[in-house]
Length: 64
Image 1: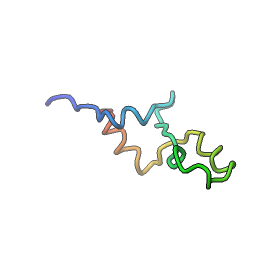
Image 2 (image 1 turned 45 degrees about the horizontal axis):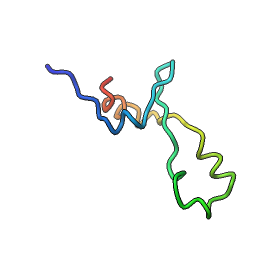
Image 3 (image 1 turned 30 degrees about the horizontal axis):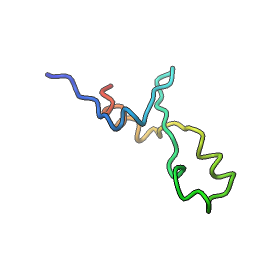
Image 4 (image 1 turned 60 degrees about the vertical axis):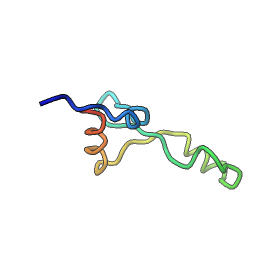
């Protein structure tokens, strides 16, 4: 059986932590920033982990 190809879009958006969890960036932080509060924009700068329900699907896209 051939190897799975990595989904290149997913490869650019997700990274693995040392313990094997998947990191992602938060959405809604790139434009139309004038109406968003400073607190909300500051929170959007920080990364977060992919939820457990999505992790299996993301892992498959990344070929792992």
